[in-house]
Image (tube, rainbow, N blue to C red; front, side, top):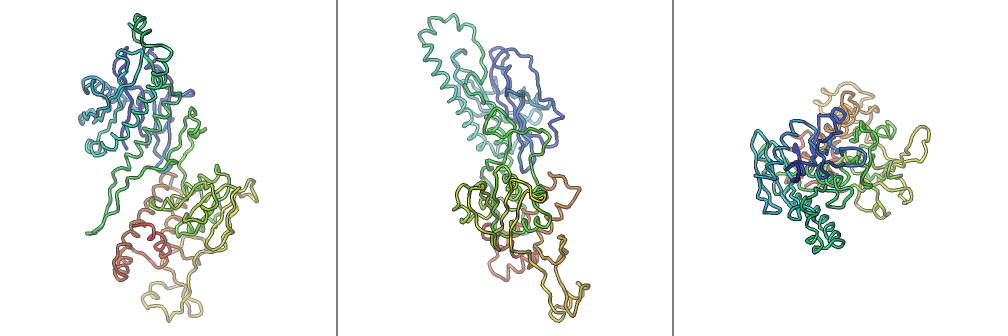
Length: 500
């Protein structure tokens, strides 16, 4: 979502200002930005540290490659000026300070459109025993912001409630050590209010890392909240609108202040992995079989250290449409998960797994490299082969259009040129295109990820259309229109049971 989410407060010394901003970066590299921002403000409420090691927190979406950056001031100068103006309007003449928890929409095409959520946080040392805060969402698209306003309002209210609850606990603790009667008797001490930062008010050491995770999730989920569906012809159905939350593992964070968040040592490392990661782990000839089994529903069991298998599983997930991601189980803790309906499972070394068979594809991550490989792949099955038919069994049109290989009166016929080195294999068209995309040297990791998603979505829509065919004759006509060939049937059979 192309927006900026900022936390603002009304400072007793400097007035309304933004103190924490989160925004999405796609084409801008982190190394091109100045993340170590210096502030001229000296009060503790404005001059604070986001984390122990740096003045910025960033995270990357492993699927789209988008980067979410949180700093004190927006990293782009033009955006920083818009956020500054929005903060002033949000906390001064833009809202009614007497109402706690209200939502206000304002702005224009020049300064951007803003959704503001104003609330108060308890502070025994502030005037009126509370500080005024707001969370603003700034974007250029007015109608998109209005459409997702109920979604944003629900979750921004949860964020503000968490901050208020933490501040309330701090207030109750302070009241136990310093009673209200003592505060009245020593009123001279409170004639000059002392500004306190959000860390002091909530007592949460990692409060800004938590805010970053909340705001990043909102930016990510907001982009998925409204989806556009393109249909061809006058179809009587539409795919259901996606409203589910992104999986918990979608984001990888760099904050070293929060123990449960993964630390990224190399800022230049691309944390979104493409299908090339699969190819780098398994042998070249095994890469095709892994893709085929994942696409056609052969159970894949990945066994090994979760730190090694996790990224492998993330890449396997790219071979399935989103509605089928629930067929995957990452780091299963019980053996009964293997015998369940899960099709792609990863387990640790201490869990027993079934022997490899035509219906079970096993990948074992080894503790030590054996013959230069870190995995052992076992699958007695094989890719489908081209069938040989006698010339008399071919229609004349096919013989005219498929001249070439003829041996003892037999023609080896396959509908499309295979991209696998073994020319005798006959695999689904989707797999052919995926293998070609992986081999394309001009594709970067991000481009390959997008190409993979486009191909998976294309076939998901084809299967959805075929599912709505009322008879075999109608389905046959649809297959001709959609370009579905007999060798694509394994994918159709597997996906159709899970796509509606």
